[in-house]
Length: 355
Length: 221
Image 1: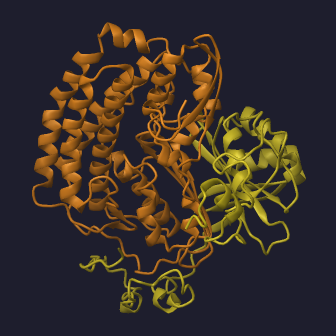
Image 2: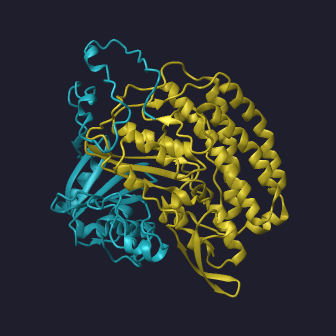
Image 3: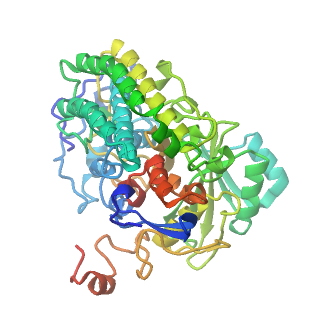
């Protein structure tokens, strides 16, 4: 299957070993989109590399950017000012909603429900418009800078975020009326691609996939970054770890993200948006690993500094890459048609898998 | 990219010990590009004036004590860097120590496995494992040193997630993991020559023979 199969969300190639219609083994062939991002990092300054991380998970660039900026800030032993952190939180949560919406639309499309895609893109468009107004870009935003933000929030920022969040409550209900009780949807997703909690942990799976397996773990709670420690939100978990549970978890996550945004815009602190970092960054020698909760799971940056302007080594732990590894475990015993559902439910972005 | 139009004005609380000397990052042109890495050091003056901050400190918590009591010499060094715990271990015993850390110390998830190349060192590679413990909500970093042809014990049997990650390290650095079930390239084509993330592999370098043969072009640049 693949690498040019519409349901593989990019250039994933899957070798399937079949017994009739049943899958008895699989192997993922990846690397078609490998660009050597980590090598590029070693040949750029810290700031020059920041836009590159947007090109990994290109549907959630804001989250990748946040992880990188915070990792370098940790390396510099500095922190972004409170105002920057709150604005970062708002944008990152909007990005989470946008990423989940894209997932929902395409996942439903893969399984055969055409309508949700149009609904999801309608709302996603609103979010991308907010990004565009904020920093001029919609996808590869490079919204944050090391040390804080480059741009102030525009005048109607809070209002627009609020309007979106207010509307969005009823929009989620719309998606749910299309799918949650839909017999075909339930038939195609319930009991498909079960991943137990023990397997999920053994395979290092993170994000909604892990939570759907019943592990209540979210880096936003476990090791709060940005401004997450100030807001109340729930971590939704599933029970069986099947495709339907992962669907429910992501739906609930969108609701929670919406609540975080609403809490955050109520009280955005005033003050500077940039910490005092020089124009030439030379972090003291040493190393740091910093992970944040991206829409797809734990995105981690391991950065080694040798005291010069360029990182000595940057390693990125991409959630899609690690989560995809559990694919084989999830797909065995299922029908060929379910393979499509399972690829969709892991929510991979090949730009991030291959880097 | 780096040219912020508005100078961030930090409303510094009067700490007294910080006169204007630490302030102005001299306006270097933002195009301090990679080709001249030696040029900008003078501009980076704002960093040093503070008293030297000690970022790496020796680590001696309960975990390290238990570990040392049980394995003694297998623990080469225990430090903290920016409050993150790092244990340097003896390479040959990595798998056994990993099993202990997973079962006894509850580091049940391997979040990340990678390597760093230091070509001037006698043992040029660091292999890095970033562990996470769900019950303790703690992270721990393991490090082993390996020379060019030395094999590193695979930890796939301890954390299955290491499978692809070790393959990636093999792909990019050429480090062999002994006991790995299926050690082959993962991101690059199987026939590719060379290990791109080694420091002596130039960023413009490529396997030209492969490119010519498989893509039918002279260069992939």
